[in-house]
Image (cartoon, rainbow, N blue to C red; front, side):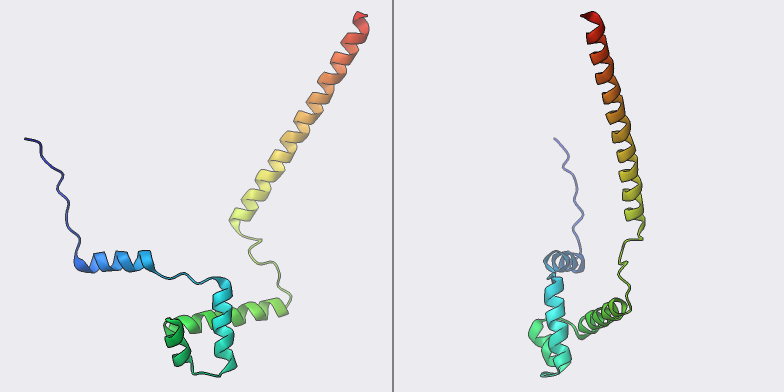
Length: 124
């Protein structure tokens, strides 16, 4: 008889955690801004707003803080954003290398064309 692979059953807590993680609602930037602005208007309490939107209050306050910090940076003239990240630096270096390789290939192509033209003139 063949032996079957033994699968270790997950605990109920792990299963519930995996389901919650997979079905967690993702808010777009526009939704976050709408919710924060609605909270800043002050028509409803933050608790009521969060209950209505189905989010935790600490999540609202985190979004609010990020929103206000981004506004402060923008008003202060800081528009660099993520342009200094390592990934962008790596991409810029790669782009520079590709441009150099293209320039070398273009130059070599021109030289080959000139040599073919020159050989054709000598052969006539």
